[in-house]
Length: 288
Image (cartoon, rainbow, N blue to C red):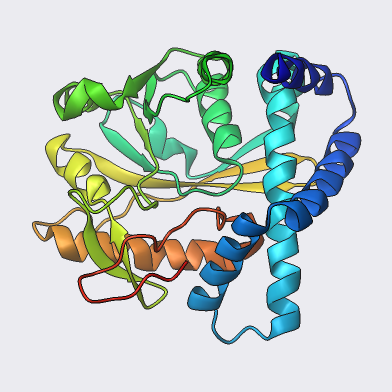
């Protein structure tokens, strides 16, 4: 009952001005900052490890803003998934090297975990004619799961691969010309992960960006989504000319290095609520 009520509220948000939704997100974010102490400590630990030069006041302010951005983006799914198509399009600005996505050349889209990741996916699937794919993790709550699946498949022709579909199906889709919207910048456990630096700290990182690019004979094109006062800017960057190589470890380290430069431009919009350093190399102590 509780989940259904929340989803009804999310649908109702589609009819409100964006400024109202963002104010509600600001209020929700401030509440979450104080109420969810365990997750606040995760954000604080991540920022301390990645930005050791931040003084206490600046770190606290950035932590608060992280919660605000997280909450605002979550509420934005109301209009992303329930708003009129023309309203959604008007709030999503697709910019940059969009020509990288023309034609049928295999493409892996490097989509880091900024809070607007669903806005980026929506912009691509609504505004471009290609058939996109991504990897989806089932949600424990069946009502939430159905809502997210419906929202992410709202526009265009797309496919959401489950973890059980395996690598072969994803690679086959890539080679057929379906761009893969890939989010490989989280701690997915030590299995098949490599420990490479992330802001100078060893982080378990899946080498899937390099692996899928090589297996799919695809170029890698970063897509960065930034929350703005008008909605979101979805920026397509030029394809990486030096990626992938035959060195999986070097490729994965390079991915993290370039990710850092993207984060530095909008640190409050990165998904710091995630335990990025949960798994540690042998002999290192836990950080959370």
